Length: 616
Image 1: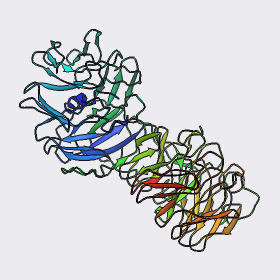
Image 2 (image 1 turned 90 degrees about the vertical axis):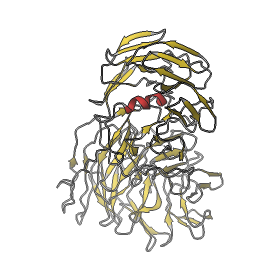
Image 3 (image 1 turned 30 degrees about the vertical axis):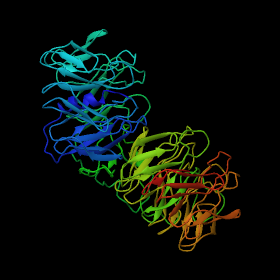
Image 4 (image 1 turned 60 degrees about the vertical axis):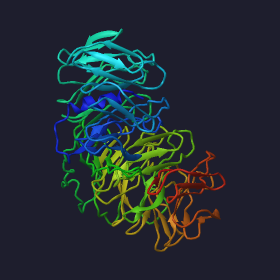
């Protein structure tokens, strides 16, 4: 991970306007996420505080001596006027919170050590100057161009007005002393290079942007939100007036473009006639937008930290992948008496016309009287389902033994699926308030209307397709074109491949009387009002069976196949092919304790109260 994060936050503050203390701070990480967290008067200090390889968004509130690490912890450490200097001081791979008292040069590393080094007016720095894996305390005395590295060296390098930027510029795992002179756009790296790159007003943001182990010379131009990385890329990202806070937020070994700045609320896309329900169904695209390098997030509020040692929920993020909005058809609420789809119908009559293919399963009841649908849960493409959760309150996705990243907001519903047809699931969220779909590192578009339920599945092609179910009318509409009717008020959508033709059919489960109906195919009864639907391919014949889970007794009933006991009240059914044998195994997720139990296979704890399982 980029060890410059601790040094860069101080420079970032130089480029921000002087806001009111109540102005919220907006973070944006390119191709990953956008969220509100902290105030603009705070100091951003993103570092890997847990040692898991991911940079954690964090801030230090100087006026109160409060730290908050997003989704992990918050605590009181330091005091008003102290300078935060977090770094990996003990070489264990995790950054320690630390402060330097500006008045007397006292450094205090939380739970580790304290020492005096430097004086008033010196700029505190940290980097691994000797290659031992631990970061060293250092300071730069700007008035004289004087550097001192604790217990190592002292020298003159630079001049008044220079900005100190130690980093590993040659990949030898040892930081080089370096400066950027804004007045000339000059970079000087001791023993390596002198080069002009950038200009006055730019923020120097050297980091390892390509994961090759070497920091690249780079600048961020706040006036234009323009990033320039020497011999690598130029990109517009962020908002004018932001500061750059690059770090390895996704744990892939390369630092990500990221910006931090004041939140300027922008109205949600206003309804237009093309997005307003009409009486005549249409499959024509109704909303387009021009590509923009800086999509505007629509985040919600950020809590102010109070000194505490107890972790607490943090800011609510808003997904903002960089791809632009794409055209998408918007369904109308009232289907015609004889609805039809643009795709060929099947030959078997049933409660409603036809549809197509996937691997979704509903997990009951987050909102709006229905479950959300996971279209695919194999996040590494190895043919087995991966255990994973979405923590909406923090926008955090965690996939066991694979990855952890931020994407989404508290009001979003998870809607993962294989949207590009490569055999690997992409994280995705659907925002019911404005029908916004965001697929991580892939696309972002509007489809549906507020209140619709997301029902992604592989309805016709080789990839998952965005789709919505409007239970008030029993209307299904598909982003790729077409619509059909299946179900009605109170029904839960359960799309799946119920005939083994390799395509998913729109289908519903009606808790009131246990009725199952698959469009253009079949209808049968299984389960009752207190049961949760849990369909899947339990027999391994490539055809889905209807299944019901009764939480009150832990009873599973799989149509024409089996009955067994697994789970208890409060559990969610999460059937999936956990062992890669081509058959779905019954499984449950116990939200209260994060317990996963897969029939005849495993029992583990992963997740916590409030998490939503994203496994299929």
